[in-house]
Amino acid sequence: MLLTDIHVGKQVRIINTNQMDELVNRRLLDLGIMEGSIVKIKRILPLKGPIAIEAKGQLIGIRHREAKMIQVENA
Image 1 (cartoon, rainbow, N blue to C red):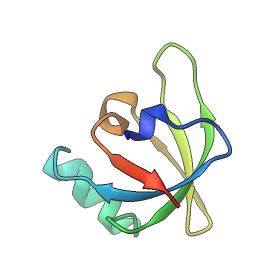
Image 2: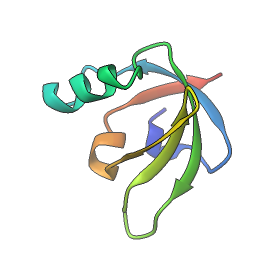
Image 3: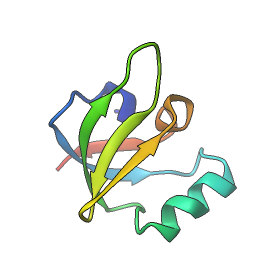
């Protein structure tokens, strides 16, 4: 399942980020978001806009094209 498949309010665990661009992956690591992290979908903007996720008490926006490369499972 991909991060873009999840509905607002649902919590999921990140299981794979290997398909992401190395720079974006490094940025998420700097924010403490990595494989095994639990995130909650806070908002999905229309027209394939960014997805706002909450992780470790911080709100982060991720582009739709990068969110499509993050594999998740139910937490």
